[in-house]
Image 1 (tube, helix red, strand yellow):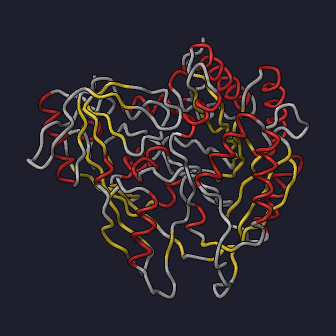
Image 2: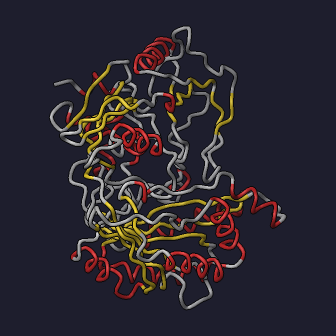
Image 3: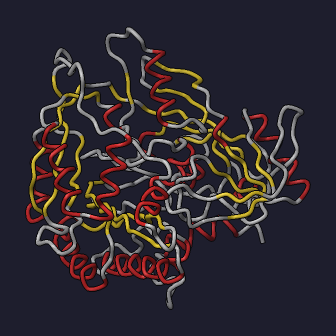
Length: 476
């Protein structure tokens, strides 16, 4: 078994490599990069490399290690915590390491390069299975955006809208990692087990994931069942859906702050398997990119109408049949907020900041009641929110799903002025504190400044301290 020194050296400031083969040509001038959603992580990197193979990654890592250069690694650039960028670092953009390598039809395992994004992954395995009577499909992916790499999904240990699913680690058979020395390590539950546990939810601290063996499940047809309900008995409603065999679902609540429905009334949509001979609709109802842009504009200007239109659309799709994998794909309108800023003649640009707060399921209603009071008192502008479920993660080293949680997503409007950013950061800290009083010590802060409170480590559990100690102990 390898020692920690062998695979951890340089893991926090991952020393890696900047020269390469002739076909590797970096963007060598200093460049500003940023995340896509919050756009609050503008960072100057010294150069950007786009490797196309495992060997390219190794070459870059080894050369930068020799030259004493520091690496940061990015994929789809949706992470908002700043972990994918470092000032004056050499940035590796992993998205061109993206081939579908193999499909094990007998066991339902697809092997892909980890820079692949979810739409190409799904297209790839469907193409390989064209004409198969019983095809395989993904079990889950992160919600809200598709243009994330598999490596990024692993780094966050993300989850989808599965009703009885654990975080993403449960779907990973193995992965290939290039460590800080440029050494290739295959990690699984039986090989390099500690790395396997550390890398899931490890924010990229332990190396560069270059390939993944992903567990699939039989591809099924599912029917969407939609109703409007309140938070009062929401957990019981989820439990009833699970008992009835539903596999996916979520609850998207009203964002109208001055209404009695705020954070209470919502669209409850779940998906149950139906026989494979069930006919698919010739033309499925779906929201287009333009529809989403209109809804997002309304969410900033007329919250009541935004929810009414959204609810009406979902109710119109009650009974519609989908595939279990492709129904998880969604549209993310690129640069939507710049359009909103222009229409509103905004004095400052703005975006949304997003976080997910996880609380024990019996405490969901009390939590949302407290959030409602806080958001009204502090005039917090909530643009979007949803409740999903997660099962306990009993595999990763740093599990965020420490028990079966109700997961609540909050997407807050954030004006890019000092006062606007501070308002959102304060709101997120209060959310974390509210969750902490209900047994979730950390919440899931997605912006580094959220740790800048008077007691910045108050949310950190002992396991987080051990995690960070594991990452840095041999770099000093």
